[in-house]
Length: 366
Image 1 (tube, one colour):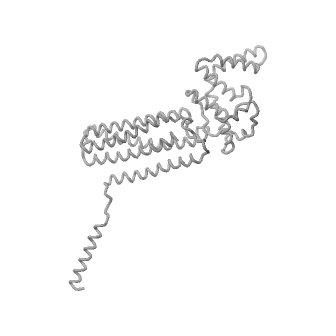
Image 2 (cartoon, helix red, strand yellow):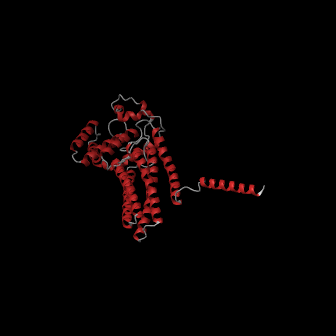
Image 3 (cartoon, one colour):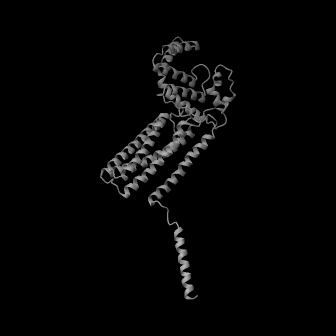
């Protein structure tokens, strides 16, 4: 190749290299920190999508109307709404903190961070209260009586006076499910024992009156007749004036049905569960073991989703606490590091807020 040809070849290659460089993307137009936080949030989105998706699939797979309602598992829609507002407001304050540091207003930024931290503490306080309510009522995975329906109940003749109540809607809708799920007689007996243990001290005043009447009849060398027992209980019921007396009498009635000391056959664990639920609705301080179909499945989903979310809130509180200490030492000034740090922290906190916006309606409202 002559000298003129070599020069032409060099010019062509140089032009091609310039054109290639012009269209070659050498990196995305964001900082390394922002790229890292977005990659982290993508993994978090996939994690919570798995939890929420599993919850939806399990819930949609249960018979219509069988999934526990918020009232069945002591969920307060009002507390959930308050927590939602608290988190949304905290997202606003963290945005204002980033805006303040961008303008060099360190004091305003510190105040907004303090408000955000306080909102997180309020959220966790309400969540702790809700968890304590679950624990006090025994609503925990593996501790809930979720299947007490003995398959033999489907064969009972409900035309008899002592079994006619099984035709009532509150009983009948569950009996239709008898035999569709594994029934554990041992778990049913355990449930009855737990209810009996809780009812006995509350019903003690009525038990003592009945025992006194039986002792008097024994002195007369006879047994207390069914009519005498019925008249005695009617008198006790009529004389019950205070809330405590009414509660003692109603607890005694359930206890008598459970033990078989009243008229008719001993109540099954399923019937005791329905009666226990009624008492819990009337007297919230009893904390009797509850019969909640699909309760263990619900509790597993609830504690998994809200527990992991609460762990993320705690992570945010740790970061905000460090920022507060940073600010109190006079180091929360306008510079590239602080502005970027607050922006990335805000992105994480917005993600925590968005996750709760999905959890709130799924668990508390629907």
